[in-house]
Structure formats: C-alpha cells, structure tokens
Image 1: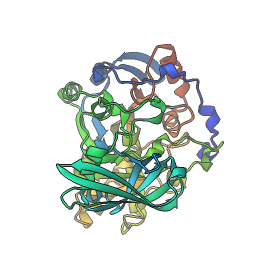
Image 2: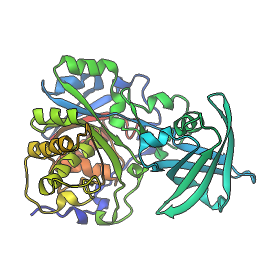
Image 3: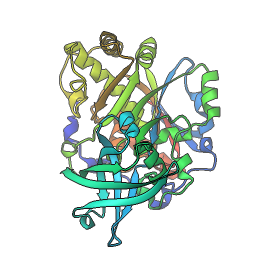
Image 4: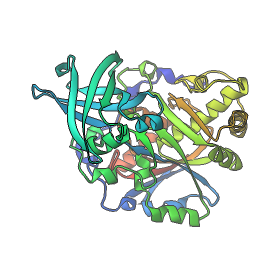
Length: 406
C-alpha cells in the first residue's frame, strides 16, 4: 500500500539553507551555471552547457514559454502612504490575452501591500503611456481569501492594460531575494524563449538556457516543444499546515497546442521536462485524458485537474491513450489548443506518467516543489541536496540547476 500523500508531514522536507547560499543575482552568462546530474541514484556535476551530453538522442524536451509580467503596481495616497497592488490573475475578462488587450477597464485578483492604509476610496496615478497622459484609477472590490478584486480604469481608448503594465508595472522578483527589482532583472528573470505573457514568477529552470544550448540540443537530435503554464504567486506560498492535506494548491492556467500533444504521442508519451511548471502541465495532461476517457463530453471546467485527483482510485490507462483522448477532444471541438487549469499537487506516493527526466533548480525547504522532486527521485532528495550544499551550488530562482533521471 502506498503512502497516503495527504498525511505527509512537511517538517520531514526541511534542510538548512543559509542565506549566503541563495543566489541574489544570476551569473553573468546564463549557461555557465553548475549542473548537478542525478542518474539512477548516482550524483556528479558538470556545467550547464554540457546538458545535451546527458540526454539520449531522439528525446523530446518540453519547455514552458510563459513570460513574466510586470505585475506590481505602486500607488501613493494623498496621505503619502504607499500601496502596492500585485496583479495575480485576470477576472474581467478572465482570459489573459483578452485582458491585456482591454482599453479603459480591466479587473484583476490582486494581493495588496499596506492594505490597512487603503480602507476605501480610489487610488489614482498620473502617467504617460505611448505619448498619452492618462490617469489610472484602482478601486478595491470584494475580498477573496488573501486577495482582492481590483477594478482598473483609465481615460484613454488608445492604451491597453498591457501597455500600462509595460510602462508602470514592476517585475515581481521572488520575495526571498530580499532586494528591490533592478533594471537588469527585466532581462535576466525571463527565459530566452518566453513569449506568452501571464506569469508572476519565472519558470526558473529555463533561465539557464541560451540560444547556443538550444541549438546544441537540436544538433544532438533532441526535439524541442513548448507549452504554457502561467506561474501564480502561489508557487511561493509556504506550506503552513503540519500535514499537506491542509495545504490548498493554487490554480494555474495551462495551454497546450495540438501539435505538442501529437509530438508526445509520437514519443510514446515520454518527455524530458524543463522545470516544475512543465512537469505539472505534462502530468496534468495525463489526468485530463483520464477524465475524457470516462466522460468524452466533459466541459472545460470538468477538465480542471483537482488537487488530489491523481490519488483517487480509477482504472489505469497508458499515457499514450490518455493523450489520444485529448487529441480526440480537440478534434471534436475543432480546437488547435487545449486551454484548462490545474491544481495538481505532486508528492511522494504520486506515480509519474509522462515525465522521464527533469531539469530543475534547487527549491526552498518545506515547499511543494521539494515534494514534487522527492516523488520523482523515489524519496532520495536528501542525497541530491546534501551534495549541492557541500559542493558550493547556488540555490533558488537565480541559482544552479540539476538534471534528474530516476
């Protein structure tokens, strides 16, 4: 009988992480970071440019092409109080692309810094966007958990919400860096292949890749595909409950093209995932396929992967069959892209279906990302982290990387 993941005690996933081991800035050249290689229980190290040497020819490597948005907006009240409004996810309209195209009004779910100083009333900020002087107004609506509904309005139909964020927003670097965002972060905190705006945190395993490494991978006969998972602020949400049953995973929005699903089927449903966001998306695809096997007429809402869904009892189907169910669904609806959402929690006791190797950074103690890694390496995460700590690896978002092959 497998361990029930709901009763995992997060305290068992702790390790000492001194502040000086957290990389505050990236290396000057992205692909010169260290690479820890974990293969079948053995650990050694190399440099990131050597990554292609460790992957079998013909592998399929999957990247998350999400782009971090400049999601932090600062307003100053007439009293002088500084209020930070951090855009988490679009509400009206609730589609990222449509919301960014809005003119004059957009609504977002936001975290608010210095909330006690913003009891009521509107916040206003004058700015110039694309040569137009505009006034941006923020009005606070209902509270939803730790976030609030915020309506943004501005007085110019030539200016989109994307334009405003581009000029007025600040890139949200991780809170544990304990420093202000710098101009350089606008470049270094994006992957070189980022395209689709919507994340409030970078898929950091991808930060090591350069065009040269991507070229070398292709020269080695490794196929590269992309999908999109917009990383929410929940990725930094610490596990506060003793057992993970008490931790509610955040919802993340995913989109995967029909061509990527086909490519996965061509590779027997096996992939090398770049980053935990790609892992969560790929593994969610399997469970979406299972839903469609049971209910071919499922709505988009019913395709949402619930937090504990993978641990519930159901008939096992092979990954290729699950992916074919998604392809059939797209065909029936004349769709090129699967758009849905996931709350999947991957923890020890989880049975990986699609991901056979993983490129990932070193994660915070007692985090859901550490649980995901532990599930992948069959509980052997301490061997990896002890090696990294004793061999001068740099940790977290701007830190070094690892290739895990269980």
